[in-house]
Image (cartoon, rainbow, N blue to C red; front, side, top):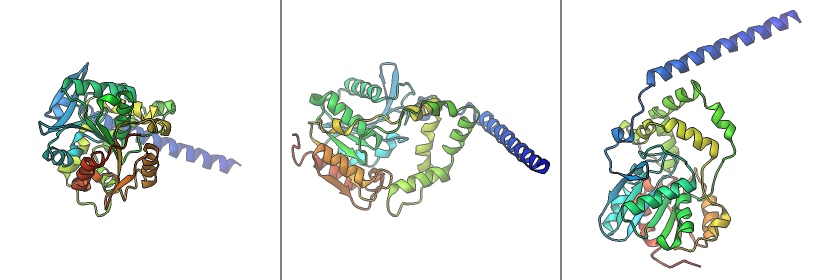
Length: 318
């Protein structure tokens, strides 16, 4: 019994020592990287537009024609549309890609809820004189596109859901926000969001078949927005509250022209999820061959063609 106590005490001391060493290391990382956060305007050259008290970052292609508003997914800056945007503009559309906070370069001002995003999007469209746009939402952005179609159907020309089922996910985990504390959370956040290997691995898993080699310049497009002031706290709030979206019943109430486009090899949001969403919307699922979750990056020409054709080919209102 005495020997067992000595072994148990030794294990406790080892674990305590490891904990203290890890804590010291985390504090060292926090101190070394403290101050690396910057205002969005110092990291992105614009354009920006002020909506209320929030400086909203966006990209724009084309000046005339029916407007198309592109909404990215989680951890996606508007850069993800850099190939699709010009292709849509070449088809005589005014195209705008919006950074939904807390992603991209829009100022980190909450709340990061569907209501908050819809208010921001409405203000953005009003400030830039965007009338009755076609809304294209990728992944998380699909829920925002559907939300606007439900809230202001007369102001929406149509919606395209790209690899996004539009459904809310998670939430009810307020305890999670209490676990993401100093020094552990800041250290892990700063290390992981600056690690080319990890960011590249995430992109390769979402790309689809035969992902290319990603150099540092490409990976930096995804890493740099994590250094926008306030992002650490904003992501902690989002993690606790869950990803905003709608319900399957809500999808059945959409009356504007609508389409669901999906990477045929998407392993992030399954094709089955796409089928369920398309069924709820009463439209066929349109697949992008040899594409994963990031079809907008891997197959931009195919995605652009489906965006242009899917809602124009028929008025699928019920």
